[in-house]
Image (cartoon, rainbow, N blue to C red; front, side):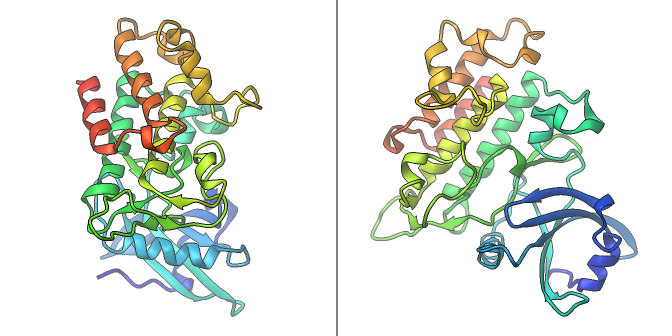
Length: 310
């Protein structure tokens, strides 16, 4: 059902993978914007070319293909096709081709200085809430509503992409894991991962750092940290979060009486929404608790976030 593309076609689409077409870099390769012909029409795509010299890149490619094969949701990045071939030098070549997201990643909107061409980019409170709901909807589908429960394992701002209407789409399934369903266990059953997986600051270190199992609770932690970043403007890896202090503890110490003192200054212009922001922070903290057993499930959180926005 997918269009078949050759290495040469992708090379032409990206002007031989020129730096002018480079739009991002991930754990296992580079991402280029390309223009290809689709039924006599030009189509913009994002081409992620894997660096097969990087340890784990081939496994990541297979994991992503397996994860994306049967899942469809409006808040997941839509894969268009893939290419597994050889390049002009005869080396193995693997690439994934996705629908292009014109508004880039959430990272670029939260950190406008990192994107010099868009210094004026800023998200309002309602836009942040809607994006949070979009991400929650994607995770609820992956954990509970899809054909097979999946954990993403690498939820962070650069893996959330925004389309023309600022609708969020979760992408990069290179670390995704299927959950094992055995003898009536819930979708929180897990599959083994080895070592630290995902992006430091967004993965639960007490679990994944010790080589424990991937679980839906791990995604919930990442989601909670992502929300805290979206509404406070602080990265979990900022210099002030060292030793015993982290983003969760930093916000917890201010919650609820002083929470308005630590939110993103760009939200100060929107007066009268203190109760709304406090509610978002409350659920962000519940999602990012240290103990996985104390974290909420995404079905409940998604409903709460919709209620807060409404």
